[in-house]
Image (cartoon, rainbow, N blue to C red):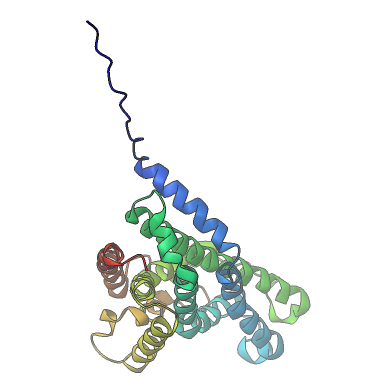
Length: 276
């Protein structure tokens, strides 16, 4: 006597970790095209270059001594303009804009309904944030060198066309600056996940920037992540030639520590977040 077997229904296997991350990245890239975060990354790299270009175009003859290689002073002045205030403000705005997409119109409820783990959601937004930061800083360097070449054509008396920039110190300084931004990026990312809206993260970021600038002479200023981009300017050196210390500075190590600690805290907060 044969017995009929009851049909069995098996749930589909959960997608792999990389598949989940790929799905989140694809969705976040689609959202990114509808926000101003991408344009901010482009404009954030162009603004300090434009400001410095205007200064050297109008007052370059008073800044550069006759017969002097203008590139070291040009790069140093531009990096100071960018790192002290504009870059920290850029990081504060970028993290707020990127996460604010989910805060609007119950976006987190939709995100948590997707068949992906929260770690994939968290990692995807963090990776995009890192990519946009690197894009802005790399674009800044490219535009900085291009603007210097344009100055050589428009103002030949400044000497840009008779000299060439040393790319190795510029690339080294780019690495210092990127590492210095990580601590501030991590703190702002966690703040943007915690607060619903941009007011809280924006207020925290401005307070951090003001604190960092106010306490620059404090012996423990390296502990403050918002001052790291200013502190790494100490790697710049040399007169007449552009030199950059290749070794990591204390502010960079603290920045990495802030970044790691913020990532752990941010992931825990995301796991605790309710869908509403």
